[in-house]
Image (cartoon, rainbow, N blue to C red; front, side, top):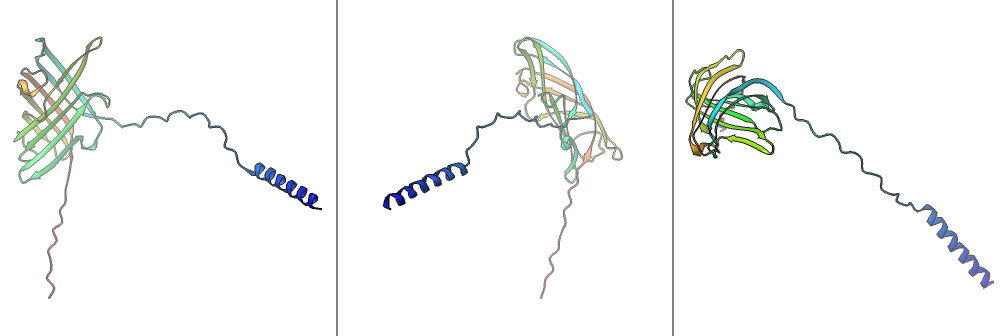
Length: 207
């Protein structure tokens, strides 16, 4: 009788192990990695331009005279007018050639009023890169916030059209050639005016 009970117990254990093994989930082999998704897109726009020419001498003594025309932008703040105080308005304009290119020009123009034909002050950031042969690049860049002379400024409040001319006489420390250089150009863009509203709340004394 004891042998029968022991045998029955052993059979029961085996049956339980078979049942447990059959119910256990086994992890399958890892599948192949899927293809990489498309790169994110940055929308580029073309409106207006900053164009002109620049000249000077490279570090190796070679004289250069190049022209540029930048008309592409990627940010809503690339053509804006803002007021920074009483009698002080700032036009901020940026244009380039391509989202992947370093070629850009940024003009900042301070005026006494939006319709002033002359500027109180002006600044230029400028980068120009060009292939000049196998494994060779010509790169010209101004230092940050180079003073610029602006003239013939014209702003139409109704249409937003803003035009003008500029010239920058650069000293050696103002550009990467370390030699004097000159940039002259014109611009034409449609400006978006930025408004900031400040609500003044007067305190009411309660007795």
